[in-house]
Length: 302
Image (cartoon, rainbow, N blue to C red):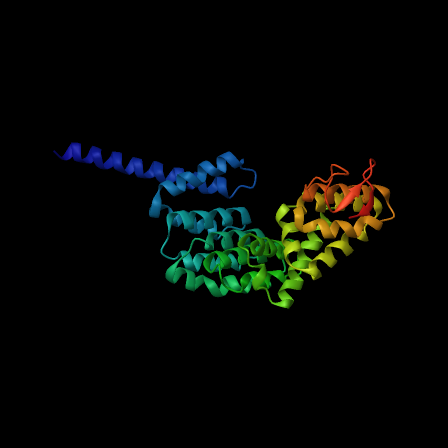
């Protein structure tokens, strides 16, 4: 009786030893900068598979000198759902490496209850981070927690164009433009215009142009001024972009380009205005608002 029991015990010890060895190997791989991505994922899976028994190894990763290992440690702490996850993420949000701070903020998005309250002060402090990616990650988490709060308005004022345009997109997609204060409305317009110009008027969402056209004369003026002050080649692209995305609401804006010194700009604005209304008249195949000559240049308004 004693010998079989001893054999079982020895087998169990050997199995446990192999498991510890596998976990140690996984930690070593995650601590190594040169570990390929596929092997890193496999190592993470090994530690995650150990469940709470692997938390000792997770803590080793969180204390690593390699930021990539600390990042993976945060991922594992979140996946294993450790009891001290809130405290772990707070430490991650204050990490010396911006990529770790960004990752901690993205993981915080899924928190709820007491853990959310524990992390919230550190997440709000991240809004003052010198790295725009960290600020953006913090805004995303806070908006996910409270979609109707004031964080989107605050993000509109961020000095980084990517952060402010992210906030602008949130407003546009939620149809909140009508609820903007005059100050926030001005910031929204500035953010969209800056994005249009930085993208050289290409690959712009339909929503950006459409939103500007719903914000009234102030936005129309800003859109026209931004496009009209570009060099002729970008002005042509701007008119084409606005015309193709504006729809009927942009016809009046197209009229402003009829006196442009560049013939191509005049032709494109006339074509866009004619295509936007699509009401055939007896004298041309354009629209009932203007008459267009064969070359596409407007010759009269009816």
